[in-house]
Length: 226
Image (cartoon, rainbow, N blue to C red; front, side, top):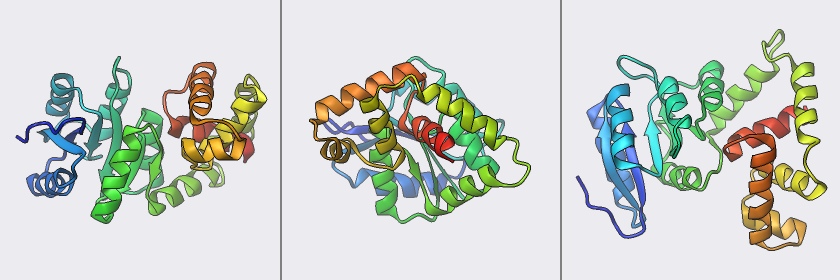
């Protein structure tokens, strides 16, 4: 196992295929700011590795022996010091993508994603940002807008708007920036304030709305606007 690099992002790899874990380790550990601190092949070993190593990010396969990755993501999100969770898989069905995000995953990226984009996705998830591959994003939109969708668009929109009404004007502007995929620096430039002010707004928004990450917030804003 590689030793930690000073100040590096600590990553746990969870996949039942050893060759996949090996390839991911090679991709991540050639980066100066990343260290793979553990590998796991099923749900039980994944939860144990996270408990022992306290990583910043978990790369988690959807299909695992004994229990699926979505259930693991749900258990990790419920923890006191939840890591960022990036689902990395060959499956991109709408139900799986929505299920992963609803369980607390910060992103969903396919295994055929170019290595450089996987590295970028790990960094974004470590910062609390949302990550969806284009294919996964398309699946989410299709599932959410399909006729007869269980989400009940009108009811969801009304409930989302009611929740967002608790925000101040500046907090609402910050939330919309996050939903558009802007980072803190871009939101600050748009609003004409400092990055520290944006971070303060984000903290207040998360507290008022009861959301734990930018993915959940972005979904809520989009629900309100659809």
